Image 1 (tube, helix red, strand yellow):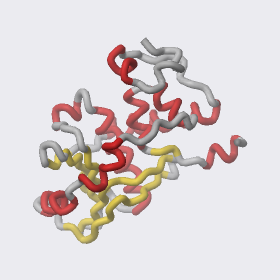
Image 2 (image 1 turned 135 degrees about the vertical axis):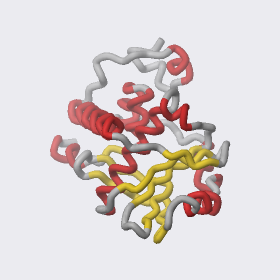
Image 3 (image 1 turned 180 degrees about the vertical axis):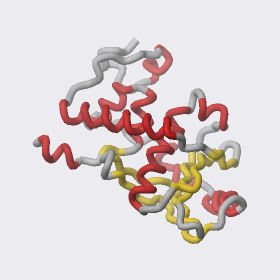
Image 4 (image 1 turned 60 degrees about the vertical axis):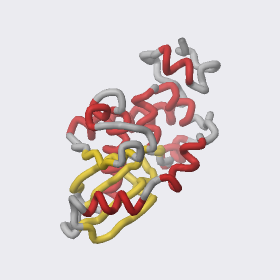
Amino acid sequence: MSSSLVEDVLIPIGLVKEYYWCPMEAYFKLMAWREAPTESMMAGAEIVPRDRIVELLEERHRVHELLWEHPVVSRRLRLGGRVDLVAITVNDAVVVVEAKLSKTSRRALRGRDKRLLIQLAAYAIAAEEALRLPLEAAYVYSTEVDKLIEAKITPLLRRLVEHAAKELRRMLLEAKPPETVRTNRRRCRVCSYRHVCPFAR
């Protein structure tokens, strides 16, 4: 593929999350060494209780329009994806909701699940740009705990998204993996790329 064609490719927003989990895993997926979708990924849309999410959302916001599984794109960062829900409020602003089947919490989003928070920030940036509306709020909905967990999309989170987008774009253009990776034995043990990864422990 020519470099000009590669430049036009939109990198999936899901790879921003993968980048902060393990840059090598993001690299393999970027190079199309794709895993088969997991059962939870395939079942996700059916499991997410849309009526319940709307009920919780309307307790906090005056919603004008609901856009489910809505495609959003940031041309500036060349990122694209499909967010679980974008709500347009009466204030002409967007509320972004990403549903997760796993259990999480506000504390976990600041720690072990921070990559989910960065992914949410990427969706928020793309939704703002695609719909040309400012962000009013962003939430992770955890089906396990039946809660909307508000996430502040800070300037730092926006910079982390920009950094990941830049690095993913570099890997794609150069077809080269990251030079160094901080490995984690537990992550490596469950990674489907461990047999081909030079950093696997």
